[in-house]
Length: 287
Image (cartoon, rainbow, N blue to C red; front, side, top):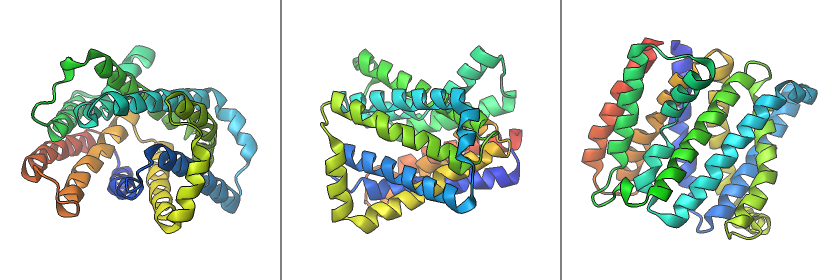
């Protein structure tokens, strides 16, 4: 991984917990997430207009776009079910273990395997993520159905990461981002309705009226974070390495949680973060 790509991915990771903290301030999580998706689509559309992209180029990435939508849909469906069934902190490390999913899918589909040093770095990073999220009394095997949902969600994140990495080689990242998000604005409506959330669009309008600057700030941070990832793919960033380095957002969120939100177990979590950082450094140097 080149220094430029590494810096872009690390910058994206630094922004990730910031926009998460902003949208977590709403009690209506479903409407807040839908509003975030709509605003991302609108922001990317404006960006495309400003730089003058040709929207017809979307036809060049339709197969990859279908995979990206499918991965996002799997991720969203399963994650919402996990919210309903269990304590997310017990299963979120699996959901975030997309580098493992990328390695598995890359081997199954393309017969490609990262270098041994990169695999070791991925293992350290994902292991640190598990340790970071682990809480006493939470055991994964107590609920095999929720464990399966977490694994499917992880595979979903790997699918859309791989699809986006290939699509970014063919169209400008803002156009790719718009293509994905505009599709998800339509897919999420029936998804959220099926999970008992009802029609969230009206509630999303109420949220933006109540806290306009909070949500606009969140979407600008989130958009910048995601576009940096797509730019790194367009510059040739390896998808397994990029998804691994992105996990730097986890220790950053721990620091914010301890310093801003006064959360517990900060010392133990920082030790786990150091394990993750070691893995990330190995992945960067291996590329």
